Structures are given as structure tokens and as C-alpha cells.
Image (cartoon, rainbow, N blue to C red; front, top):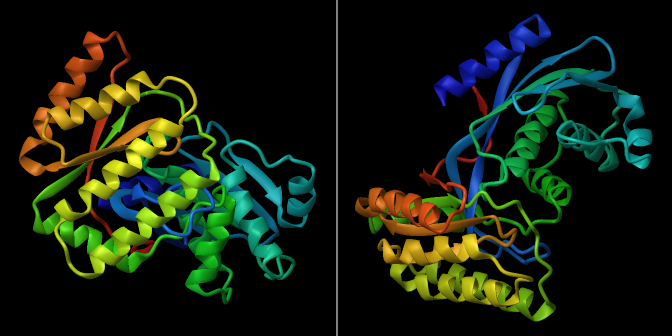
Length: 323
């Protein structure tokens, strides 16, 4: 984290020509159950890949944003957010921070009474790799703007604002996330996210699939409250993958290969994400290297572009960082 904070601060100084007032960060997430849009809840884990936002107040009403994943500095007056949103002009990566500011206004914040801001966003979360990069950007920006503007929203209201901007993703129970992390630690397990290189392709799942996934998420939540080992959750997560795979539209050869290879390498469970671009596997920590080598070999043998295996660890939620 220290290097990413330093990088973000230096980038802010280079782009904006001054020092930031403060930094905020938010984690990426991996989800093993309940990640379907409009779900009632998700079993997710905040991970040690983060987004960092540097912010400084302005003496006008302009909001300017720059990032390491964009090529230009974007600016917009706070008074123009409603018109830009209504006209469909909030596009590309700037739509994320601009959308957060707009949403605060829609939720009751008086944007005419707050100062403009300069924002610079940095991240070490791979984009479109099943680790919640856009959600982390939204969360970090939301907390930065909320604190800088001295708003009075509850944590639950901020989470709901982010959820609605992030395609209505299901809520995450942080208490269960902590229990999930404890179960992984107890059993000496690692989480590996296999980015297949396949473009994200949100699937359309029938109501019965959503209902069954909600049931699985609730069953897992109940199991974690009883401090069961991860082995007790594996069948539920495996059934989730089978249900998503059966309901998916069209062939998914890269995902099928990643799942099969993960199991052959010793994974306790492997599950496709609902966006059909990545696989999340839980594997004994001592077998991570075997998985990485096996994925490289399997994808090369089948003529697929190389897949990236990201090993992640549990982390903390959104927070204000020290400069």
C-alpha cells in the first residue's frame, strides 16, 4: 500500500501542480457466492489490491479527475452534472467519479454549496479480471467526496449509492466477509483469481437461477456463523458454478479449461464469475505455484492467449490514508 499511496500522491502533484489534501483507498473484492445483479447478498472478500484516490479542494465549483487508466484530465462543473447525466454525456472512466458526485446530489447533498475538487485515481486492481475494480473506484471516490464535503450520509447509505452505480450489485456483509477470511486463514488456503483474458460478457440468468444463488449465499452465511471449516462451504460454491455454467449462453472454453485445471491442481473449489471472464479458485497455499504453472501450460496447449493468475489475500475496507 505504501508504494501505491506514494505513486498516487506524486501523480497528483505532477498533474494538478500542487499537493493533495488527503488520500482515501478502497479494496477490490472477489466473490464466491451471490454476485448476480439483484441478488440479496454476496459472500465476498476484500482483497489486498486497492484503489487510491488523492483529493484537494478547489475555490470554484469545478470537479477535475485524472487517473492511471485514462489518457486525459477531465473536468466538469458541479452545476452541469445533472444535464450531463440526463444527456448521456457521462462516458468512459470519468463517468465513475462524476457519477458519484451526481449521485450524492440526487440523494440530497446540496452540490451548489460544496467546493469543487481535484481528484487523481490510481489502482493496482487489474481491470475486468473479476476483482471489482470499478466498484473499488466508486467506493474510494465516494468516501473521499463524502469526507471532503463534510456530508452526513451513513456507511450504509454510501454502500447503497455505490451499489446502484455499480449495476445494482448485491450488498456485501462485512461480518461474513471477516468470517470467510478467518476460515481461509484457519485452513491455510489461498484465493487465486484466474483472469482468462476473455472479455467480460454479463450473462442473462433466469429467475430460478437467481433464486437458487440467493439460497446458496444465505446457506453459506449461516454456515460461517457456526465457524465451520471452508471444506463445509466447498460443495455449495461448487454447485453455484455448475448452475451458472449450465445457464450461461454460448460456449465458454477458456472458463471451462480454467476450472478443470484448477481442480486438477488441487483446488478445493473453482467457480466462474457471473460476468464470464474470470474464475475464482480456493486452493491450499502450498499448491499455488502448481496452479500457476498448470494454467500457463493448459492455455498454451489449447492455443488460448495466456491467462493471468492473481493470488490475493484478505484486506481491510475503505479508509482514509495517511499522507
